[in-house]
Amino acid sequence: MRNEMYSVEQVAERLGLHVRTVRGYIRAGRLRAVRIGKQYRIAGADLDALTGQPPPATPTGVAPVEVSSIVQVEGIDRVGADRLGTLVLAAANNAGDPAHPLRVQTVHDRERNRMKIVILGGATETAELLHLVDAVLADNNGLLAGEVDGA
Image (cartoon, rainbow, N blue to C red; front, side, top):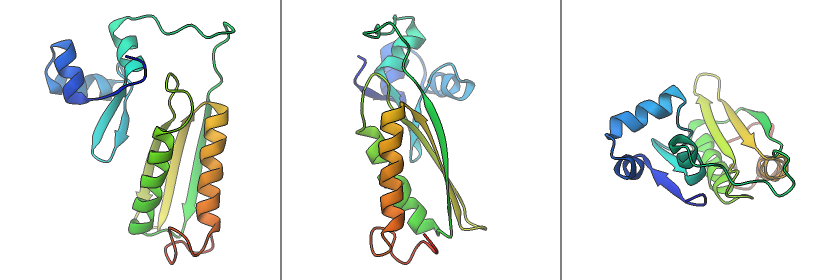
Protein backbone atom coordinates (compact mmCIF):
# COMPACT_ATOMS: atom_id res chain seq x y z
CA MET A 1 0.00 0.00 0.00
CA ARG A 2 3.01 2.33 0.38
CA ASN A 3 3.57 3.17 -3.31
CA GLU A 4 -0.01 3.91 -4.32
CA MET A 5 -1.84 7.22 -4.27
CA TYR A 6 -5.51 7.24 -3.34
CA SER A 7 -8.35 9.69 -3.85
CA VAL A 8 -10.48 10.86 -0.92
CA GLU A 9 -13.29 8.64 -2.19
CA GLN A 10 -11.03 5.56 -2.29
CA VAL A 11 -9.78 6.21 1.24
CA ALA A 12 -13.35 6.69 2.49
CA GLU A 13 -14.39 3.39 0.89
CA ARG A 14 -11.38 1.49 2.30
CA LEU A 15 -11.95 2.80 5.82
CA GLY A 16 -15.75 2.64 5.75
CA LEU A 17 -16.03 6.40 6.36
CA HIS A 18 -17.93 9.21 4.72
CA VAL A 19 -16.00 11.34 2.21
CA ARG A 20 -16.60 14.43 4.38
CA THR A 21 -14.99 12.68 7.34
CA VAL A 22 -11.84 11.94 5.33
CA ARG A 23 -11.69 15.56 4.12
CA GLY A 24 -12.07 16.65 7.76
CA TYR A 25 -9.12 14.44 8.72
CA ILE A 26 -7.05 16.11 5.98
CA ARG A 27 -8.01 19.64 7.05
CA ALA A 28 -7.34 18.82 10.71
CA GLY A 29 -3.92 17.40 9.86
CA ARG A 30 -4.75 13.84 10.98
CA LEU A 31 -4.22 12.56 7.43
CA ARG A 32 -1.49 13.93 5.17
CA ALA A 33 -2.53 14.59 1.59
CA VAL A 34 -1.26 16.40 -1.49
CA ARG A 35 -3.58 18.78 -3.22
CA ILE A 36 -3.57 18.44 -7.00
CA GLY A 37 -5.83 21.03 -8.54
CA LYS A 38 -9.05 20.85 -6.59
CA GLN A 39 -8.58 17.26 -5.42
CA TYR A 40 -6.53 15.59 -2.72
CA ARG A 41 -4.33 12.52 -3.17
CA ILE A 42 -3.27 10.40 -0.20
CA ALA A 43 -0.11 8.30 -0.26
CA GLY A 44 -0.39 4.71 0.90
CA ALA A 45 2.22 5.36 3.60
CA ASP A 46 0.13 8.23 4.98
CA LEU A 47 -2.96 6.03 4.98
CA ASP A 48 -0.94 3.38 6.86
CA ALA A 49 0.09 6.02 9.40
CA LEU A 50 -3.55 6.98 9.98
CA THR A 51 -4.63 3.37 10.48
CA GLY A 52 -1.71 2.54 12.76
CA GLN A 53 0.34 0.44 10.36
CA PRO A 54 4.05 0.65 11.21
CA PRO A 55 6.15 2.66 8.74
CA PRO A 56 8.74 0.74 6.75
CA ALA A 57 12.09 0.55 8.52
CA THR A 58 14.90 2.62 7.08
CA PRO A 59 17.90 0.50 6.06
CA THR A 60 20.37 2.32 8.30
CA GLY A 61 17.95 2.93 11.16
CA VAL A 62 18.35 6.67 10.62
CA ALA A 63 15.35 8.79 9.76
CA PRO A 64 15.50 10.40 6.31
CA VAL A 65 16.36 14.10 6.02
CA GLU A 66 13.52 16.40 5.09
CA VAL A 67 14.02 19.78 3.46
CA SER A 68 11.54 22.64 3.20
CA SER A 69 11.94 25.22 0.45
CA ILE A 70 9.93 28.22 -0.67
CA VAL A 71 10.42 29.54 -4.20
CA GLN A 72 9.02 32.97 -5.03
CA VAL A 73 8.54 33.81 -8.71
CA GLU A 74 7.93 37.47 -9.53
CA GLY A 75 6.16 38.80 -12.62
CA ILE A 76 4.17 35.69 -13.52
CA ASP A 77 0.57 35.86 -14.64
CA ARG A 78 -2.12 33.29 -13.89
CA VAL A 79 -1.57 31.28 -17.09
CA GLY A 80 2.17 31.03 -16.49
CA ALA A 81 1.59 30.13 -12.84
CA ASP A 82 -0.82 27.36 -13.87
CA ARG A 83 1.71 25.97 -16.34
CA LEU A 84 4.58 26.12 -13.88
CA GLY A 85 2.44 24.64 -11.11
CA THR A 86 1.37 21.72 -13.30
CA LEU A 87 4.97 21.03 -14.29
CA VAL A 88 6.21 21.15 -10.70
CA LEU A 89 3.42 18.90 -9.39
CA ALA A 90 3.96 16.38 -12.18
CA ALA A 91 7.71 16.31 -11.51
CA ALA A 92 7.14 15.95 -7.76
CA ASN A 93 4.78 13.02 -8.30
CA ASN A 94 7.45 11.20 -10.31
CA ALA A 95 10.42 12.00 -8.08
CA GLY A 96 12.50 9.73 -5.89
CA ASP A 97 11.43 7.36 -3.16
CA PRO A 98 7.68 6.57 -3.19
CA ALA A 99 7.84 5.90 0.56
CA HIS A 100 8.88 9.54 1.10
CA PRO A 101 7.11 11.55 -1.62
CA LEU A 102 7.70 15.23 -2.22
CA ARG A 103 4.86 17.43 -1.05
CA VAL A 104 4.25 20.57 -3.09
CA GLN A 105 1.85 23.49 -2.69
CA THR A 106 1.56 26.39 -5.13
CA VAL A 107 -0.09 29.77 -4.63
CA HIS A 108 -0.52 32.60 -7.14
CA ASP A 109 -1.14 36.21 -6.10
CA ARG A 110 -2.96 37.72 -9.07
CA GLU A 111 -2.70 41.32 -7.82
CA ARG A 112 1.10 41.20 -7.50
CA ASN A 113 1.77 38.70 -10.34
CA ARG A 114 3.69 36.58 -7.87
CA MET A 115 3.78 32.83 -7.34
CA LYS A 116 5.06 30.88 -4.37
CA ILE A 117 5.98 27.21 -4.52
CA VAL A 118 6.41 25.36 -1.22
CA ILE A 119 8.35 22.08 -1.42
CA LEU A 120 8.74 19.57 1.42
CA GLY A 121 10.68 16.35 1.00
CA GLY A 122 14.03 14.62 0.75
CA ALA A 123 17.13 16.69 0.09
CA THR A 124 18.04 15.03 -3.21
CA GLU A 125 14.52 15.07 -4.64
CA THR A 126 14.00 18.69 -3.55
CA ALA A 127 17.29 19.74 -5.16
CA GLU A 128 16.31 18.05 -8.43
CA LEU A 129 12.94 19.80 -8.42
CA LEU A 130 14.59 23.16 -7.69
CA HIS A 131 16.98 22.61 -10.63
CA LEU A 132 13.97 21.96 -12.87
CA VAL A 133 12.24 25.16 -11.71
CA ASP A 134 15.46 27.12 -12.24
CA ALA A 135 15.90 25.71 -15.74
CA VAL A 136 12.31 26.52 -16.74
CA LEU A 137 12.53 30.06 -15.38
CA ALA A 138 15.94 30.64 -17.02
CA ASP A 139 14.63 29.56 -20.45
CA ASN A 140 12.92 32.75 -21.65
CA ASN A 141 11.69 31.04 -24.85
CA GLY A 142 10.41 27.89 -23.14
CA LEU A 143 7.29 26.83 -21.30
CA LEU A 144 6.59 30.25 -19.81
CA ALA A 145 7.67 32.42 -22.79
CA GLY A 146 6.23 35.88 -22.42
CA GLU A 147 4.77 34.97 -19.05
CA VAL A 148 7.69 35.73 -16.71
CA ASP A 149 9.31 39.15 -16.49
CA GLY A 150 12.99 39.24 -15.56
CA ALA A 151 13.30 35.49 -14.97
